[in-house]
Length: 314
Image (cartoon, rainbow, N blue to C red; front, side, top):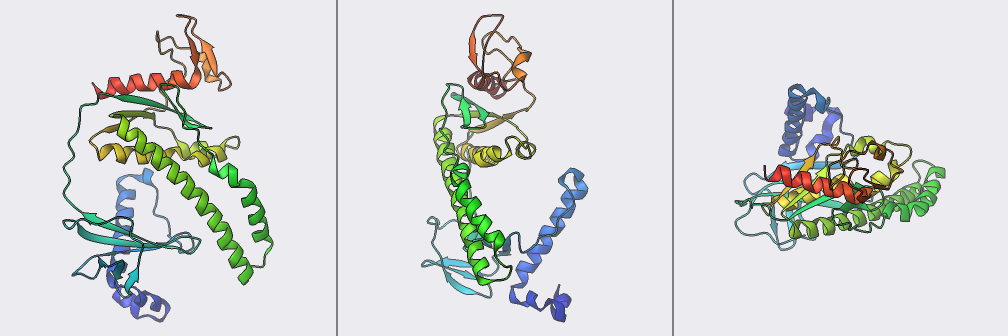
């Protein structure tokens, strides 16, 4: 790396600290090791600066510190920040990742090391969640979160602004202003969605000891021509991630059952399997065996909850 920095073609490498360059090589090494150990992870892809502008550097000999509303970064010095939360004295600063989003805002993600012994609790309260295209989920009691569908609300405005952007001359200042305007609209939608998912996942994590969801392939579902936008809009995978770490930090657990588990076909009362419910148009059905009337989503959530209890207490 030192030899490359001396060449005329890579003088820009001198602008960042050497530890950041070493960290990039470590990330590349990790990516190749993951690929060779498990080819399913895929061959490492080239990271273009146009996709995501970011770099990571490690704290060595006090080259990074946070004090008085500022953060000290190598080769930059002190920069004013809006600190998200206070930092306890026993936390040790390990590394920093600086990133810039498409709208031009800078963010600093700081990694700390601290001792935390989480005591796992025996689950007493259980919740089953069935994925819903429109309302994010339906739980085993029939409750729905009334998801606002933020992307659909902003879709017409986004189309209008993106159409203006497509007609502007590339490289012009007006096009750059319009690009930032579009980026801010996307950013607002993403922030609204993330805020909603954080609040809902926090409510569930505080109320229940064990939550069960289906392990769905959301990437494949988002590529569907019929409901791809709706899948991308509701952020189910992000919601499951938020739930998992919020439950784990309290000693609770999130259980993911196999996506082929027949939650919609199984009668939650008697266990009869109704193959006619494979048709997604069937929203309500009556069990031919016990006569129980089922709502498709609520019945699926109950079956997921029952499977959750079986796995958690096994």
